[in-house]
Length: 595
Image 1 (cartoon, rainbow, N blue to C red):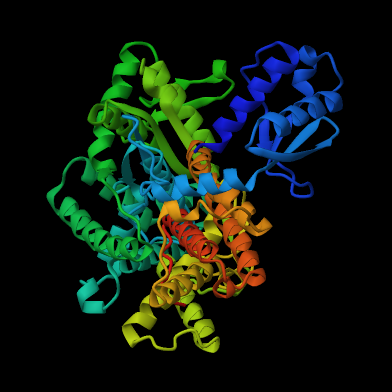
Image 2 (cartoon, rainbow, N blue to C red; image 1 turned 180 degrees about the vertical axis):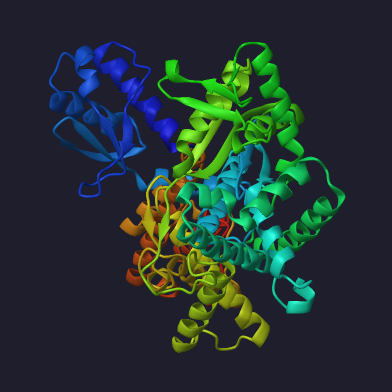
């Protein structure tokens, strides 16, 4: 039974009978927590047809519903808001519908496709804290779209070419002495990152030396020998010089092995990888075509630009004077290639930090100017930076918090707190380690996803791993608590079928409240997907866990003497556990059976 549809139908019937009029659009919303009821009808828009003030309109509809609609047991009016209390019999029917639907929370295929890009790292250093928010956010948005019936293509563009990787290559060539991940015991992405830091250190020293000799800062930055080596490597790479390409392939291979290990630990995956080294040439071709068609223009030095001043922006370089590409060139080529590969996609979502908002405005404008109608289907999922309390977490390179370090420390903190609370009794060593990882990574993911993506946030590692409060472990613990109840019920041979609940005639307030939240699960999935906001599901899971705990604290389940009501409460608990698990799974978080 779909309670919302039934309620809307009954209200429309009331309007027809009372005011001899039809109304298509009704403003039905959740009731404010301080008032009794679950559904609130906003009556202000109905005064035109009722010819009454909002309160009189609300009272007339409320009286009609109580007298004629069994789904409504009583009501209260607050100004022009009609708060409706749903009859317990209706809630039980809602529960029976959910209980019998084994696919609840997984909507049927709608035949639509969407692409979600996330991660998209440079191959010159390991993944960091910002990449964690990026990956968790993009992966979760992809899973939300899957849940509401879309075919989803998870992709990333690997920025494997350009001056950044050439800097690491130059430093390794100068100072590496043949060092490899195998010879050093250092993870591949960390090793390449080490040489990126080495480049920066030597570059700064060379600039200072040249400035001390009388060069300007600008000239010193250009003439520093290590920078000239990196720039020369970039030119050689674009000219397909064998030695340079071989070094590039070797060092990128180290990085990919390192990334794969980090992605596995994160629990994220991709359906297809795009490489900048493959797409930038397509971008260059499109830019040159744009010059021929008059969309772009060349300056005297040979560089190619687009003029967006008429669109309220400025001029943007697309090819440098030496013919080498910029990021925009590659992104033009990548977007075109993706729509060629997947022509049916309804949209392409770019999960990239908010510092790139201008970049994506420019990209989408350029694609439109090139005549690609699908440019309107491109969306920048912009998110804020993540800050950490000073000194809380290590940083291998002194500037950013390494993703591997952060995940390892979160798992260690989860182990410390779990052992202190004595939550591992009866678990073997492997089971205990799995639990520590589940809690530590769950705490990290939940904390990074519970905040609206657009907001800058402060990640507090200690707060995130607490068993109480708005945290992942609180929801994980609630699920484990319910699973313990279900194991006890099973040991007592208590099970139920949907027909056995028909004799239950009354519910506790916390049961009604939880059923309302559960019944709204699929709506929340849609809302979170269409808003590109896993935070909606994080808040939803927390609200459901909180309500269930209120039920658990106030009602001793196994003290119930009525067999039908006892079976209902066991079945009700199993549904809550299932919805909590599904809610956390779309966030990429596992929930334990024991904790």
